[in-house]
Image (cartoon, rainbow, N blue to C red; front, side, top):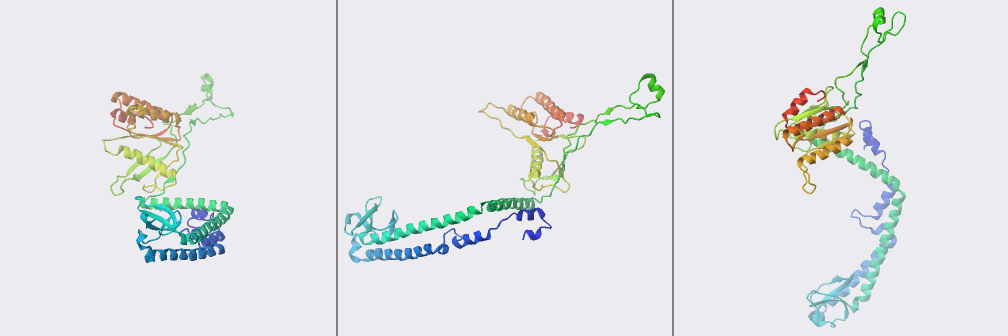
Length: 404
């Protein structure tokens, strides 16, 4: 059925084409194994014969034991009138005080010692026959399963390919079901843009074809050359990343109550500082952006409005939440700092950095100064960053700093 939809869903159909059904192997397994994983009588003629003989032996054994129980002469010696099993042998319970009144082999006794479980001498041979047939049945079942396993092993490559294709298909369908439940859309994945190149002045030649580059003094006055600066540097060096999310919703929050957010970077900034009161949604916004990027890079649709765009980041580093540790003598502040130091050692201009409550956990003036220096370092290294803060100094910093 998937192949019939190839025109509409070529990728899904391509996965389906990798299936190797192995119909002859399936038919053989279905012939031998039931839906409840039991080996069927039809698996082999030997197994069918053994099971037929096993049924006859069982009926004979039960008949002999029930006759012993029904004999009125044995009634005073019996503790109960039922047949049970001990160590794979069928036995009857008798009162310990009457041991020997019914000749047989003792296999067990009750916890109180008042009951003995004996195998009557009259049924030993029948019990032996039944037990031998049981063992024969088990050996035949093992032989059949071993033979089937050999046939499966011969098709190992085909089966592995099918299992891998089924896993891919299952993942694709799970993604689709998840997207439907979130009312998600497909974002546009855009590559990192090349950073703007410095503009170089165009050189002109005079009437004699001579280069007019940078003449000075009398030569310049005599030739009337037009002099332009050799390089014009851009005002903001941008890493070329794109984050443009419209009406983004955190995928784990109730879609009926979650407040959507719009987040975007532009050509003139790639570091975003998010401010606001407590419980205002700063951290949720940070997590939403991180999850949107990760979901997109996992091939998932996003709970966003149509037209959202994202770049593929080589690293996503986040420092969110309080992980203070008494055992490691880490305060809230030192915990954040240790994570940030690890980040700075590994991130580059193809990374996304998410920082929650930047500079928190220490003196406000020192924290604000440290946060500014960190943002300046991230700006210098052209690293796409989102950070939350309460510091008023960082709000002013963000307004006045290019790229932020």
